[in-house]
Each structure stands twice: as structure tokens, then as C-alpha cells.
Image 1: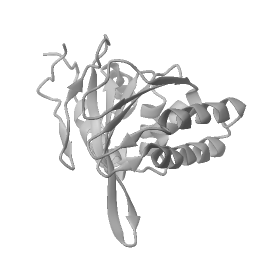
Image 2 (image 1 turned 90 degrees about the horizontal axis):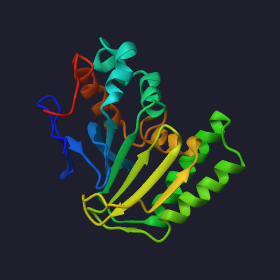
Image 3 (image 1 turned 90 degrees about the vertical axis):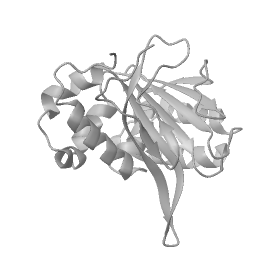
Length: 225
């Protein structure tokens, strides 16, 4: 199993530990932690925290992003939507963990996420019949789930457009995916809502920028000792 190199560290968000490297059960792939942050909303003048989100990536993500982004400051990365779009659309897998800080009904959670995804796809002109069907599949996967604090949803975003879903009662990654939705616009939209133009977690974007600034300085980046 892959172990974290000294240059990669875990992140703690609201008492949620995001380890430096994860390897899903029965998977040949390991993913390193690109960044993590809290997701919340301002409600009546108070910032209410709902989830902690960690984005993991395949090792080759660093090599893919290096030619264009090496040498940029954390501030330049953070302020560039193009940097985040290169992560979202990059030719490497992303593995996302969303751990709940507050209790959420699956139907409540998926309603807001799917509304954000639909709004983005419509703005991009990529929302059609296939995407409407994919949204229905997405909602169906979540509708009977219940997320007390500490439970998690895992997303595997493949560059070929597959969106794999897993649900867990804790930080443990389930061996099997609960559902796989094959629709690239939706797969990318899920990650876009997290770190794109109107992100649910600016803290996650900042973490990605800060950490990638360091990762991109490493000539032979790897997640194995």
C-alpha cells in the first residue's frame, strides 16, 4: 500500500482527519490529498458548517498541472478559475470525500447539490436529456440516505465521465460503489460546485492553492517512499 511521502501531509477540518494518501479497497490506485476545507452557509448572520470536504487526486495530476502552473504563487493559483478548471477537467481521477459536520437528510443534501449542478450545466450549455436523466439517477442514489455527523459520501470522478458513489457510516471507504453514473457534464459539475466559480467551499479552494504551490515545486513528485 502506498504511504505518504514527507512532502504530503494530512489536513484536519472541524475535527475530521483527512489522511495524506488513501487507497480505496480493491483498487489498484492511491490518491494524494490535494486540499481540504469546510463547507457552510451564512444563515441569519451566522456561518453554519455542514460538511468537511477533501479532494484527492491521482499522482499524475501534478505532472499534468506542472507545465502551466509551476512558479505561480498561492495567491495567483487561488485567484485563477482556470487553475481549478484544469483540476476539474484534468486527465486524471479525482476521489472526493464529504464528511458531515451536521445531520443532513440525503434528500435535502442532494436537492441542493443537484440544483447547483443543473445551474452550472445550463450556464455552460451542457444540460440536455442525458444530463436530466443523470440528475435523476444522482437524486435516486441519495434520496434514502441519512447522514449524521461523521458519516461520509465518497465521489470517484473519472476523466472518462464516470461518477462513482459510495456511502459510509464513518471515514472508512466502502469496498463497493453504491452507484456509477456515466455522464461527464454531471461528473464535472459536482466538482465545479465545490471549487469552481461559485464554490460551496472557498476554504477548500484556498487549501488546494496553498498545497499545490508546494507540490508543483517538486521535480519528481510521488506518493511512495
